[in-house]
Amino acid sequence: MSNVVLPPVINGQGYQLTIFDKVIGLARSKSLWPLPFATSCCGIEFMATMASTYDLARFGSERPSFSPRQADMLMVMGTIAKKMAPVVRQVYEQMAEPRWVIAVGACASSGGVFDTYSVLQGIDKVIPVDVYVPGCPPRPEQILDGVMKLQELVKNEPMRRRNSPEYKALLASYGITVN
Amino acid sequence: MALTNEIIRKKLEEKFGDAVYAFEEPWGMLTFEVKRDKLLEVMRWLRDDEEMGFTFLTDLCGVHYPDNEKERQFATVYHMHNWIENVRIRLKVFLNGDNPEVDSVTPLFNSANWQERETYDFFGIIFKGHPDLRRILNMDEMVSFPMRKEYPLEDAGRTDKDDRYFGREPQLIDSI
Image (cartoon, rainbow over all chains, first blue to last red; front, side, top):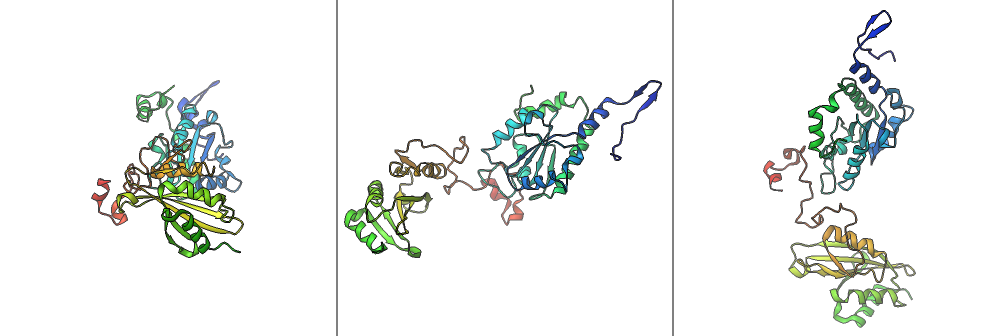
């Protein structure tokens, strides 16, 4: 892990000072447990992303968590029908804070080619999204790029963000209650 | 003797007279219309008659013809199959545009249950006598019957589409 940039430290006799936010952000960003929510072809690309050649585990996502309770990063991959929207939302609500969301592919981001009565026009209509990965479907490299973009967000997220009025207002705008 | 379209047509006309009409054979498949109140009777006979033997309901679906006269604005189409002779037929029933109601064929074919629910879901056609007529594919909260032509295909919530790239005047989408 030679590319890991450590936060600035002050070393003294028997102690080391650093910034709590940065250390925790660094730790979190290198162990994002993904929850794959795959409904169509983007899910197939994600399988390749997880497998040996592209190896998502290199980025600390060693363990795809198929339970929302233990996941940090919800990856929605594929067309979400309106009938499926409450399920996505419930999965999101079951995740513990801090939680992040990646919308993988055109359908999850905007509805894609399915501009029609039965398809949700982007998952950001029901849950907040941190990173959008374009493509139809995106190549594994693009999905990895999305994960790395999210890692940057996670690394630089202040500890207080989840308690901030802005964040609460964001959740409230989706009608999600903070527990 | 093989079961031919001519035999089926002759027998149907003998038995039901005016209730079956508008026979045609697109691509060799016997197709005809049935009067709405005779549907169950005709289908029961086609299923149970030994010579006919159409024991299988392949499919059932709806059609919307908003430009037809009032009494013919909806249709339900039934495909039946005789497995032994490998003969298929198609029945159509035309329905009123304001009040599309037809007898359910679930008493004859259990397989019609979900197919009729689907047709109800997309066209709002009421199947009288269906044991559990509710939406099956679309979300329960939906208020429209999306395959009816008065409802737009596109989702009104779409925000990222620029009409100029789709060969449309930008103001068109505002009216939807």
